[in-house]
Amino acid sequence: MRFLELFYIYNTITVNQAIAALRDLLSQPQRIIITMHRDPDADALGSSLGWALFLRRQGHQVTVISPTDYPANLRWLPGIETVLVYEEGAASRKICQQHIANATLICCLDFSALSRLKDLGKVVQEASATKLLVDHHLEPEQFADLMVWDTKAAATAQLIYKVIKELDPSLFQDERDIPIAECLYAGIMTDTGSFRHASTTPEVHLAVADMMRTGFEINRVHRLIYDSSPLSRLQLLGHVLSKIHVLPEYRTSYMTLTAADLELYSSSVGDTDGLVNYGLQVEGVVMTALFVERKGEVKISFRSAGDFSVRDLAHAHFNGGGHRNASGGRTSLSLAETIQRFLAVLPDYQEQLDSVL
Ligand code: 5GP
Ligand code: MN
Image (cartoon, rainbow, N blue to C red; front, side):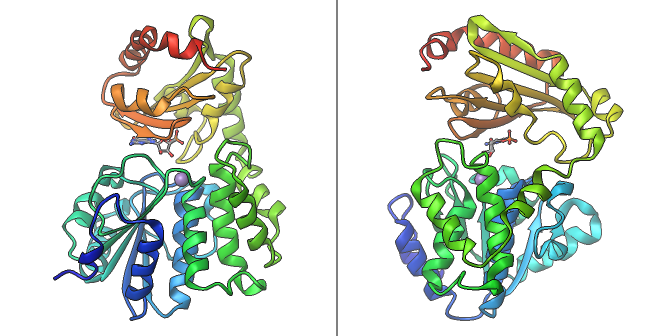
């Protein structure tokens, strides 16, 4: 019988029950894999590295695997040098597969569908290890044995904070825990849009206040993440903003980046993260999209204000998902065809867009 099978009751298991089961499991040394969604952002990587630092200190053997490369502005995260990148090459794939085959616990952080692991998804799916999901996205696929899943959590890093404080209430009392605090703060800060999205609850500020007891420098984390852009990235921003489309009748704006634009501004992974948010700054706009043509597909990011769900739109028309106010998807259509599809579905949403306060 698989360990923790008793807890294998989807959507009825509470976060606290999952943590109790995890406490049992972690009372013995485990061989642990931590993985997160492709093109990881600060929440995916920060929560993974914070969790890894905590688990290593408890005596577990931990390997962190990213499905793809990660953005340059996250290369300072404590422990990042230990991260294996699955798709880096054949040798890397083999090492990762061996680690996964030997693992006793696989932790899946900040995603809820195995397709978000790209090729790594199948390897994780077929592994015999106990699987733990820690996530705040809507509608998780049912592949995990154990779920710390809360769609109201502002960030996966917020959930990891909760888990590790339950497992060790004495954390964050002094500078020894600065590396964990920096990792988790990076995730919470970015997923809340620097503490301004509606997801910023009292619990978010209380978690941050608690972690600040270590004495880590908040300003340093902000600067490393937000104020460390290569000049070319800012020029890319200037370019994309200069040709923003606004559709007042739908209270919508959208921006596009072609493969040629990306090449012209030597854009690398992560450079387009966050650009989409500018589209929502236009007066009157309550929904925005960014279409990026990359590697033979179009990656789309959606953002919205109020109760308009871009998650539903991404899910219904663009093979995507996410959260109510921040979602994404992708198509294998051309850029022009993808935009046509977007424009064609807008009338269906006009009434909802009109009624956003
Ligand atoms: P971003 O626009 O920052 O890439 O993504 C915003 C959010 O949308 C992510 O946090 C994630 O929840 C969701 N998301 C982005 N791309 C995809 C996708 O291809 N599939 C699904 N299911 N969700 C996505
Ligand atoms: Mn997240």
